[in-house]
Structures are given as structure tokens and as C-alpha cells.
Amino acid sequence: MARAAIVLAAGLGTRMKSSRHKVLHEVCGKPMILHILDELARLRLDQVVVVVGQQGEAVTAVIGDRAETAYQAEQLGTGHATQVALPVLRGDVDTVVVLYGDAPLIRAETLERLLAEREGTGAAAVVLSAELDNPAGLGRVILAADGSVERVVEEKDASPAERQIRLVNTGVYAFRTADLADALSGLTNNNAQQEYYLTDTLAILRARGRLVRTLRVEDADEVASVNDRVQLAAVEAIARRRICERWMREGVTIVDPERTYIGADVRIGRDTVILPGTFLEGQTTVGERCVIGPHSRLTGAEVADGATIEYSVVRDSVVGPDASIGPYAYLRPGSRVGARVKIGDFVELKNATVGDDSKVSHLAYLGDAEVGRRVNVGCGVITVNYDGEQKHRTVVADDAFVGSNVNLVAPVVVGEGAYVCAGSTITDDVPADGFAIARSRQVTKPNYVKNWKQTRRRADGPDARRQVSLAGDSRSPE
Image: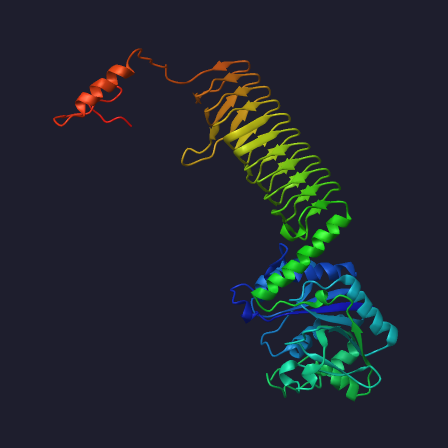
């Protein structure tokens, strides 16, 4: 028989104090709801249904085609939300797991154990429980003498004695679908919140003579949920620790896991070293034998084997094998750096390609540019790519040399093997093997400074009517 999951994600989450739906807040760079859908995908279920409500369109847009949705127009409790989902379930679904969209740390292995417990024992329902030292705020699982579940009571409805119980309900259940539908039909809202609680289905099932069991989660961190920003940070810390541990076990050296931030979808090769203060985000991939950091941020980056990136930012760009980036470089989206390229301190690339074995060592800006192989780009070089209305492209061919403090006013081409002298402003194409110099001729006045200073002292006297500049006119020197 078929298996399915219902994810409850209708409530906005007012304690987050956010204009964004709670399940869309990110943990390790990914919305919480997608963490859950990723784990459910590993189970290869026959159907997944997400219950949406407030900001349903925004949640549905993030979910895409990864799940079907059911709409809860009024938020009348978890039991009501589950009732809304039932008509969407396929008729052949025998076992359904129900969980919340704000608990992103649940593992597929735990959900599989829960499903297997329900199917193996023939129970009408199995409650995933956890024993906590501090169960404040959570519903308590009340056990019968035989160890089965008698009922679950919410803390606000619990007696003082029941609040001393440390076994808590995690909000994750596996039901036989027919028994769930039967129990939901008997729900009432006779409680402090006047809501229809999904937890009440357990007492209903027991009253009708059905077996309700509990399965204790092995790692209580898995069921940590998010209701405010403090809990969001706590869940983020757990997820981040998990990710770092995973990559260290895969052969990656992370010098300081507590100060390293790796996104859920990042991929890292063996023998790479991640130094403290580094953020790897989005769909970033890092090859083998790289050194990343310290204090670098890579978002949507593709980094080949052997590359080094320190104190730098790389966004939606490609870094080739054995390239060296930084310190303090900025690769903006659309940039591609070839093999063995040096991008040095305070260099910025934007939508630029730098070919193999080229060097842009310091203090340069290359925007909308194509730089060939074995090119040297000197200090202070900029491509003047924007004329106030349009962006234009600069091309520097293989083996060219661009001296320091050169302005390349696009659109312009510097040919193969060409040489551009330092301090030039290039507005016309330079042919292959050409030599270009575009700067004012130097004027030198010998034996001038001493005389100028004497003239200046006289001019600065009490009766001075003017000041004399180095150029010999009446303007103040700048």
C-alpha cells in the first residue's frame, strides 16, 4: 500500500514578527520547508501534501512541484489542518506521516523508523516522542500502564502533575489513514484555545479500542522547532554543526567549525581546508585541495581543484584550478577566472573573463571585460565600461601587457602581444604587437623650487595681495 506525508505549514508564525511566512525563513541558506521536503524525498513516498494558509501563494511558489498543496482558509488548529489535507490524499494511501513545517532538522531515517513501527505493529497511530530535561512549552505524552499512549495533553491544558512529565510530543505522527480519518471526525474544540487539536485524535483512537504507540527519537535535536528568532538561531546552530561534521567525515578540514558557515546545498572536495570566518552559500561547489578563507564569502561559486581564496567575496562566478584569489578581492556575478590566474588585493571583477596564467595583482577593476591568457594587468587599471547609458565591453588578447594606472575606455580592443604604457587612457583599439602611449608630455623646470619658495615667503607677508603657485600664477596651489 502507498505511503504519504502531510506537512502542516498554514500558520504565519506571529512570534517571528516578520512579514515573511515562518516556514520560508532560512536555515543554513535554505527555507525550512525545503529542508523537510528534502528529507521526505529520500523516503520515496508516493505522495506529499503541504497544508498552506496565510501567505499560501508565497509558500506554494517556494515548494514548486515538489509537493501538492491543500488550502486551510481559517487557522482552526492542527486537527482542522489535517482534515483539510485528507481529501487531497490518494485513495490507496495506507500510512501517512504528519509533521510540522517549522521543524527542519528531522531526518529521513527517523521518519522511516516511525513508518515501519506503524506498519510493523499494526497500530492506528505512532507518536514520535522525546525525553527532555526541560520540556517547558511542549505537549506531554501520557502513557498507559502497558506502555501504550493514553493521550497527549498540551501544556496549557495540563495539570501540575502532568507538567512534571518529561516525555514530550514532537508533533510528528504516523497514522493508518483510515483510522486518522475516523478520529478526525470526532474532534471538538473544547479546550483553552478553542481549536481542533490533532493530538486529541490519539485519545479518540484509544477510546475506540485502537492501539496507539510511541517511538522515542534517538536525537532530540531532530525535533527542535522554530517559533521565534531565538529558536531560529538555535536550530541554525544545530544544522550548521551537522553540516560541518558531515564534511569533516568526508575528508574536509574545517579549522574552526563554530566559526564556519556552510549552506545545506554546498559541495566540497577532499583535502580542502576551510579557515575560520568563511561562508559557503547557495549552490557553491569547491573542488579538492583548495584553501578557502579566512573570512571569505562564496555564494553560487564554482571553485576548481587547488584554488586559494582568502579574505575575498565570490558571487555566482567560476574560479579555475590552482587560481589564487585575494586577499580582499571581489568577484561579482558572471566572472570566470582561468587556471593559475592571480587575482590580487583590492581587485574587482564584474562579468569578466580572465584567461589562464594571467595576473591582475592589485587595485584594478575589470568590468564587462575579456582578458586572454598570459596577460599582465598592472596596478590601478580600470575598464571604463559605462558611458552613462550603456555598458560596453573591453577585450585584451593573449600575451598583452597593460601597465599601471591605465584607463581602457570601452568599447576597445588591445591586440595580442600589445603593450600599453603606464598612465595611458586608451580610447582606440591597439593592434596586435602594437605599442600604445596616451598621456601628456612631462614638463620639468630645473632649479625652480628654491626660487619659488623664496617668492612665496615674500608673497605671504603682511601686505601680500596675492599668492604664487608652483606654476607661477596667482592661484593657490592644490
